[in-house]
Image 1 (tube, rainbow, N blue to C red):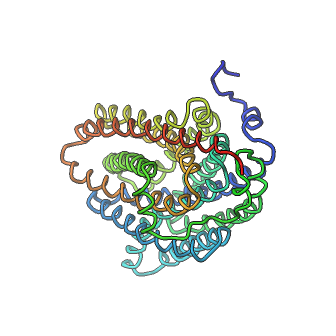
Image 2: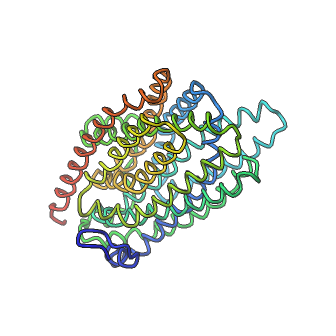
Image 3: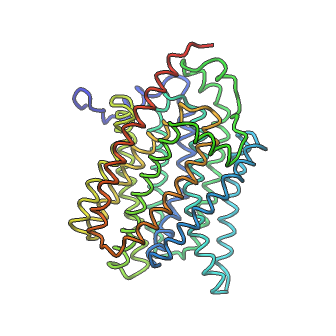
Amino acid sequence: MWGVGIPSLSFREQWSSRVHAGEAVSVCLATAWLFFLLLGYFVIRPVRETLSSLVESDDLEKLFLASFLTMLAAVPAYGVLVNLLPRRWLVRAVYHAFALCLLGFWGLLQSDSKEVQAWGVWILFVWISFFGVFATTVFWSVVADLFSSQQAKRLFGFIAAGGTVGALGGSLIASQLASHLAREQFLLVPIAVIELGLVCAWLLEKQATVLANADGLLTAAEVVEPEPTARSGLWSAVTHIWRSPYLQLICLFIFFVQFCGTQMYFEQADIVKNTLPDEAERTELFANIDLAAQALTLIAQLFLSSFLLRRLGVAAALMVLPIIYLGSFSALALNSSLQVMVVAVVIGRAAGYGITVPAREVLFTVVKREDKYKSKSFIDTVVLRGSDTVSASAFTGLEGLGLRMLNLCLLPVVALWLFVSWRLGRKQERLADAEKEQPLN
């Protein structure tokens, strides 16, 4: 046991103090769903990382632009599905489509035509980027709809930890199979685990009323409302964000997260390309980076995220990642070696997934139900990938300055990000307090 104010390292104590009566089954099902989802993604993620290290920065910028345009096209299509389908069928339609796409890519890469294979590889890069964002966006939209703000602060760390365990498993599988399987063989594993995740999603949906009744802060109207009210597409999401300073702050926060993260990604690709000439070695390195990052992420999710959110507040949790990036970019300005890059990437990802992701998802628990689907899907896809595209263009334009000067130029950007994180976290806490003070119907 640690001293007063420090989170205990006993998992049993953490579980018993944070999971209340009626919540355990829902937490386990949500955790299992995210476990299977990220297990599949992290099996194929090293394929994307390897592809990024094989192309020039100009081509990589084009791939990021293609990813953004794909997101832009997907949001209205997703809005149509939301209009047509209830939540439980919406989830099935989205994830069955992902599984079918993987099967199609596997067949495409089996082609004897070199041209078809080349196109398949570039489309696969864009698709993996799309899958990694959109699949988790749908998951967190559903979870933010099912859990209240107070439940989220206690439980989202546990749920996110399930995804980290899945990511660990996927990274471990990828690292062990990197030298034994062709890249197209990696695509078969996620198909099975996506379908297993859907079973968990179906069972979680059946727990909605039990979970709602377990939270005394919910109003009677919220308990009986079975489906989200989101029934609009891209334009409606934009107008909601335009009218909401809180949603605008979330967009700005996401922009800084992705802008700085993409800068780190480009620097990683550049340093790895200049250090490791062999493709198999690069794939193995990226898989091992994922493995180390997810191990630290798991510790952060189980023992730090809930502590920060409950004891220090959402603002403090959101400020952790920009503080880490201040240190990382400063270190890379002094020494841009592979070793320094690996440490920066591992710590940044661990803080991002372990602390920032649970805190970011808590932000959406205090918005209207329609915004949990409509505005969130726009922010997590179009804003996110648009930020990547802007960052990619910035890296290409400033690449001539050299890595040292580039990292120095990023420091004031991170300082601004730190201020936005504080403002956003304080705003969420005020909205949560106002929601808690509303009388029950």
